[in-house]
Length: 230
Image 1 (tube, rainbow, N blue to C red):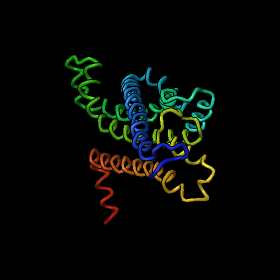
Image 2 (image 1 turned 90 degrees about the vertical axis):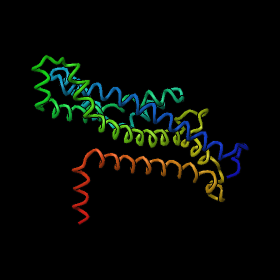
Image 3 (image 1 turned 120 degrees about the horizontal axis):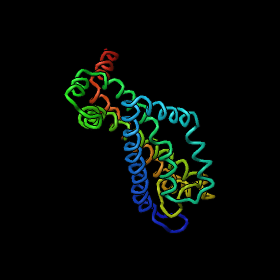
Image 4 (image 1 turned 60 degrees about the vertical axis):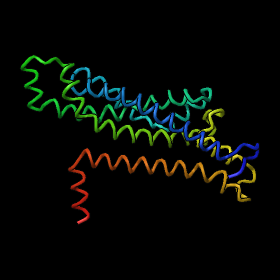
């Protein structure tokens, strides 16, 4: 791939950018799943607390996610941890809503009523009976959130709002776009195209993994797809 206008090796930047992009996606997804799952369990099991939590979720979800992140990031010092904090503001919302809807269904099962009758505490029921049944949803949501974070982080870095020290795929793409000769020569082929392909293939790969896991955890979904093919 050669070097950029500063003499930096582009392949090394892309390899290093893989670590940065995936690190941000993993950290944001992991913390978002922890917060979203915890609040979803509480909101689905306890009605009064759940009402308050879901009203907050509904209000925040009405705000456009990416435009607000762009506005806030433009007033903050560019850094990796600031980006992570911004993504965490919205990362847990959909997970909390999905987990809550599943908990509302699970808590009406007969074995939950039987556990209550023999003296099982609320914490015991949530930990031993409800949480294991929502883990498949959490895994799928983890992958979907990682996809959103990779795309959002790349978009912010392309706009110049990312950490200039941490050369993620988006920052490599940003510096390539700023090159004055990027479109009048073949520079784009070995500077702009590789990080773009890394983003596309990573997102596609995670999407296929998410769909495969969703079909595995939900046999009804797989059978419906088979019926459509027939």
